[in-house]
Length: 250
Ligand SMILES: Nc1ncnc2c1ncn2[C@@H]1O[C@H](COP(=O)(O)OP(=O)(O)OP(=O)(O)O)[C@@H](O)[C@H]1O
Image 1 (spheres, rainbow, N blue to C red):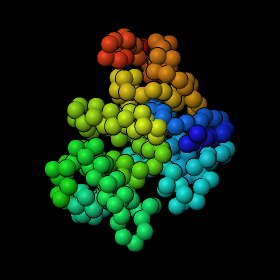
Image 2 (image 1 turned 135 degrees about the horizontal axis):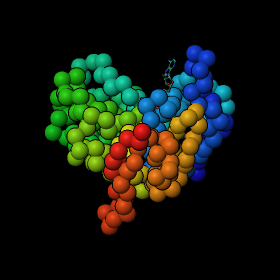
Image 3 (image 1 turned 90 degrees about the vertical axis):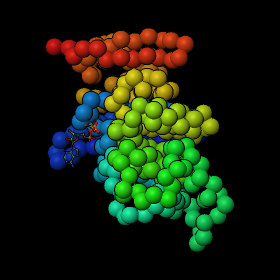
């Protein structure tokens, strides 16, 4: 089953092409990391795929009406703005909006409880979301996206600003969703976590998809040098792939 299909997607902003000719499919059960240097167009690609930005080419999600789209994909943008001083529980419950009838059902409560549990927020569910730390607020917003209980989750740098334990736990939660047949598309700069937790990496750079495949296939020394201008130590271990950036190339 294809959860996202992009065909020849191109975006130009203020007369400057950001990327062009992006064609890819994301199927069920994939944990996909969207990587690339600053300004490569990761945010732009996700926003265009969601139909939030003008684009050329086709996106299967952009073609849906807003309600169908909200049932097909949950979106966590990079900007983590919590506008109202509501409780963590109330904010996470907003993730149920696309599914809700007039009253919350058992399924709504279950999805909210599960998302709160996944993100380790049970002890703070009655706290005011706007009074939490930046990383805690990020976890609440990830929980809201997870409560939406969609086949696909798209998140723009969701683990930026989280402490190491919560970064790993969040990537594990995403990988667990993929193992259960859902899919996740997540942009991130931490290539170590990308290499370790993603089943597939899409490398965006130089206005195009430079590589798309398993971490071993994408993070070759040549590609890492060309796309990021760095060298890295890599090893396959019993605990998974290790990727450690080493030096900036001249
Ligand atoms: N509203 C806009 N108007 C003009 N150019 C823009 C606009 N938004 C983004 N851009 C440009 O588009 C390019 C891609 O930006 P984008 O935010 O998608 O990159 P990114 O890969 O997500 O970067 P980062 O890793 O820094 O978050 C950048 O060169 C940026 O300056």
